[in-house]
Length: 226
Image 1 (cartoon, rainbow, N blue to C red):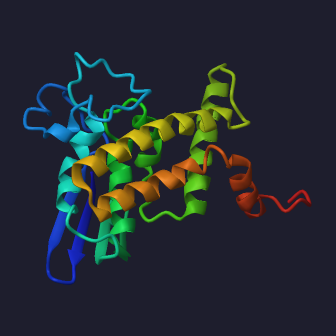
Image 2 (image 1 turned 90 degrees about the vertical axis):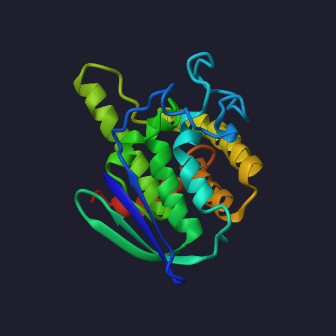
């Protein structure tokens, strides 16, 4: 379990518990789901779900409570955010844009959406409040580790990260549609900016992959064989 606890200056406290291994039931979990979570509401153009089996978007269903809780709070609002994982605690005084971005990213990566769930390996090593550099390093490292296991099993590894770019291109289509879904439903500051901030991070893994790799090259390689 991973817990997020927001403490505001006015005494308001909000707590969320995310189970990375939670199971989603497309019938029971949508029993009281609101209209904005229906699958056909701003459905992603590359959504692979069968509409007869899934009447609602699993990512929207999982994010509904968070979106409602923060819909009237400005993104610049400051709060103490404590994140507790099985291994450690993180505490930071952060804007809601940053804090909600981390929480929403975790929820989306562990939801039942077949495309968002491609990020599940990242969620198992959750790092809240990650910088752009940390995001790039973690995404590339986790992908390359997967390629190592593919190689060990006799498969064809992708050391050029082409599959990582393609995965993030798929995510970009989902990101755009999901952002439109949230904006239409809530028209608020914190949710939209938090999502946009998260989506902008993932977009850096598509069109500007080479530029992103160049930025972190000096951390690992000095050009002198070291």
